[in-house]
Amino acid sequence: MDPLFMATRLFRRKRYEECVKACTEILDHNPYDQAAWFMKARALTEQTYVDEVDMEEEGIAEALLDETAIADVSRPGTSLKKPPGSSAGFGKSQGIRPLSQSGRPVSGFVRPGTQSGQARSMEQALGAPRTAFTARPVTSASGRYVRLGTASMLTEPGGPFIDVSKLDLNKYAQKPALSKALFEYLFHHEGNVRSALELAAASTEACGFKDWWWKVQLGKCYHRLGMYRDAEQQFKSALKHRDATVDVYLYLCKVYVKLDQPNTALRHYKEGLERFKDNPSILTRIARIHEGLDNEEETLQYYKQVLCVDNTSIEAIASIATHYFYNDLPEIALRYFRRLLQMGVHNAELFTNLGLCCYYAQLFDMALSCLQRALDLATEENVADVWYNIGNVAVGMGDRKLAYHSFKVALANNNDHAEAYNNLGVLEWRRERGEVALACFQSCAHLAPHFYESHFNIALASDKIGNLQDSYTSVQKSLEVFPRHEESKELLKSLRQHFAAL
Image (cartoon, rainbow, N blue to C red; front, side, top):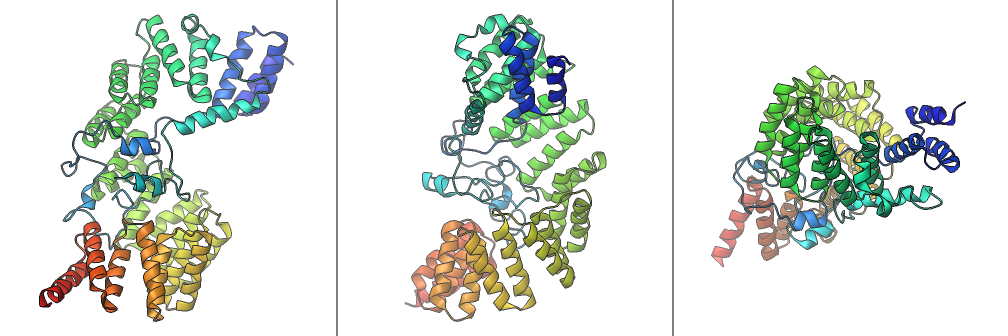
């Protein structure tokens, strides 16, 4: 059998490592075989391919050294970094739906960027968790791509497959098929954005600026290098071509989201809907922006439109279920989560959500069964969250002993679980162990300063033991995080009366 035909079959079956070995054997016999070189470059690229459409996690440099910011204070409804729900008088109450570190309501679907908070100082940037479990922040937005490229070189015993420093990029730009494969290899596998940018610029010029694909690749390089306005120009130029795909709109609006211009992104998304009617990718991203702006009704409307087009969208189903759950409709949320189970989603998070919906729908026997199943499927990253939810269910059922041990086990699996510290502190306070309870509340406030509950509990406990100064300081922090909290307002009013009497 022809070795090149065998390598092509392996590539189509996504057996990339075997495809690379087959191409290497061909190149050992004939180093100038362009077909084998092309196939090997494609296989190496697919091994480390990263979808550039979705937003990536922000690193410390991007969070603190934002060169695109024009003003510190934005108008309501015009910024994703400071949504309306984070200020007084707007959005859903934090007592009903908790907020993330960035001030947005907790979403029903974990995406890149949803776990990160808006750091205002170097201490917050270093201490804020950037993933669902680890507290180690991302050092830079491009760091992950560089690590992918260098790690993949270990599969090459003789060094890298292509020596970029010896390439004549202008010569490859004259060969459309080879130049596209080489660009994707440089961009995704090597992480060499500057060489990829040089090749894209030469290829764009070689084709007479008539190929929209190369303009998109130029925009991707500019975006990776932080040159967002240059990327915007390239994507807009690509949209002038009739054969441009929907991805161009997604890349363009990704730039506007990075520049914190959600309304401009929404306008271009709607232009994309006119060109690509009812496209689920555009509808999903419109819903994400409305979710970031805390517009619940619009978010629900667009996610329902997504389901009308694509009834297997896991993100849309999970987000709608979360909306109904936090709006006191656990029975309807249960139907959506069961739909995910029927679609083949089988993980601890889903069974935990099913258990909570069953509990709030007063199906207690099913709730315990689902939580037990969640424990069986739990991994090291989410076992603490499962035990935390078991503790909450136990508190609701009146079994304080089970709740106490559940929170203890949650903290044993994840010592940085702020919510478990707070609830454990409440139980310790009810057991009349005030010092231990206060220590738990302080640990929660240190780990999660965006939780108003820990600050209010510190204030209330300090007030009970007569430490009025600490109580006054903590209740002010509570109101700073959640200005509409009535209990904090009453406690602050009482403390001011005490101070006035002195």
